[in-house]
Amino acid sequence: MTRIRRGYIARRRRTKMRLFASSFRGAHSRLTRTITQQRIRALFSANRDRDIKKREFRRLWITRINAIIRESGIFHSYSRLIHDLYKRQLILNRKILAQIAISNRNFFFIISHEITKKVN
Image (cartoon, rainbow, N blue to C red; front, side, top):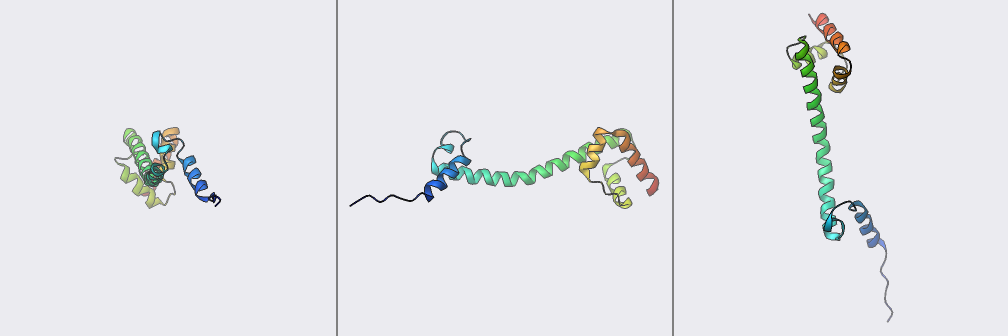
């Protein structure tokens, strides 16, 4: 009886997984079972860390804005500045405010003075 040749679908799937894990070290890039485990783990970590990255950047922007505010002495706190921004209905998010505060402090001071004038 002649030998039956298997299909290529499973091989193609494993090859695809191997390409994903080609940069991993040791058995994590060679053995199919460990490749699958590491692939699941890597995709799970990537999904989780995307949310963490957003959180960390928001914290960074808040810290930068707060440092500039306290250094200049315009506002006493970050929360007061954000409250007044919302009260004035200015559409400036924390990312933009942090970039302005770092790159162009004079413009940031002008913005904060305008906010204090209008609110008071």
